[in-house]
Amino acid sequence: MQGTVVKGDLNMKKILLKTEALSKSFSSGGSLQHVLKNIDLELYEGDFTVIMGASGAGKSTLLYALSGMDTPTLGTITFAEQVISKLNQDELAVFRRGHCGFVFQQIYLIDGMSVMDNVLAAGLLACRDKKVILQKAKELFAAVDISEETQKKFPTQISGGEAQRAGMVRALINSPEILFADEPTGALNSKTGLDVLDTLTRFNEMGQSIVMVTHDMRSARRGNRILYLKDGVILGECELGKYTSHAPDDAARQEKLSSFLIEMGW
Image 1 (cartoon, helix red, strand yellow):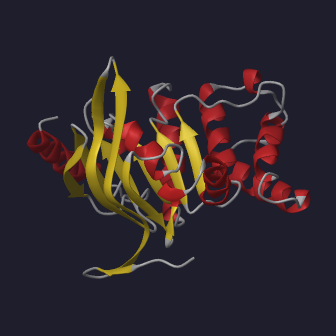
Image 2: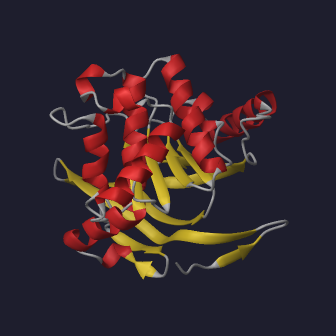
């Protein structure tokens, strides 16, 4: 995959996705609501990017536009030199299947299929070699600590935390360049939410690029780059540096993020 390279102080970052004058409007009650307004943004390979902002700021709308789940009203979105904002719905579906993974607050596993079959069904959409997909699924399930016994169960038979981690396996089965997560811990209790955050952190440490929408500071601290959205524009951003599971330095990250959010008027 080709991409523009950006020189930093110590590292060279490759641009995975870029927007120019990205705008999104909706018609409501006879009037036009401008949800996203002329957003210029670059997302970099290997980053854990977090999008924050008050309710109604346009966070999820931005994530859906970036991932090709929705089309912008104006502006362009470029992914690896391909302008995806010009693709039709069928072409966007192919793009998402090949390049993006998704984790939502609601997991949407198919109740009539085992946990493993839910993952295999997603994998076989992009690769017809079941043996290859099965091996990849086993490796991912091991990485998120889901046992073979649990893999055989139906979604109604597992916990919320297990379901969310299974959802992550499904999202990663096709080796996406970017994993998009929309409030992935929003429906979970504190302990299971922490397990999900630890799992996301581990995958990011292995090089997985992640874009996550959250209103939760504990979740946001896992990111290295925080974008604050207000009234449809990116008001500011904060660079926290990489979170490492071995030495998280959470107190310092908490203080820096808190100061930034106060400055943004959160």
